[in-house]
Length: 276
Image (cartoon, rainbow, N blue to C red; front, top):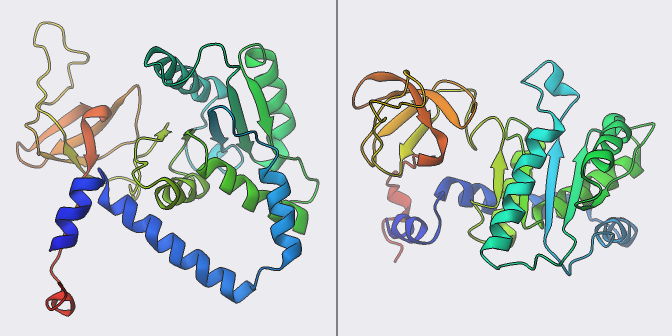
């Protein structure tokens, strides 16, 4: 079980790190099968090189098309709130200079890009340099595929990303981050679901003791927990809370998401008994 101790020491979300390593192997396998040629590499590199590297870049992935039917649609302002917050914290901690013009990269469904960019430039163009991909008439074209591959690389290399983890694209970006940056579990903020949450009943673990203030509770539905308690998630994230069940106390209610992390399970495998 040495790998358990190692992962828990150097990464706050071992499952996320492991998935990131699987993605590396998977991408290498796909690369071998496809035998990516020089033309494809040159095309994706040209797109990636559009984004300057001299200052922090925050990426947002606004998933619109399938969210109209599959999950709650998140407006641009909900993404940008966390972009503003990240830059504010970085400036206050003196990790970046307030004199720099901060940069935001916007990725979304190709069909919705024009409208979204118009809104972003009107509302946030005075605060940020805004970068984005292209809009295509035919999303199944080779050009659109190359653009999608490049955008995934751009987002995975951003210093911070805001997206919805109910989206496959967002999850892939988060996993690739772990292979690029190592411990990058805090480099992404999700507006709806936790990573690895398979449409509720995901097990999360309380990172600290929490008791609602009896006289001034945030909501009367809040539940308490001891550090290490396992909470079964029963809803998506809303206003910073999830609805869940404490498996120890058998209580059901709201709990703050910032005090939860992925509950990791480790199993022994006989095949690894002789490995030192």
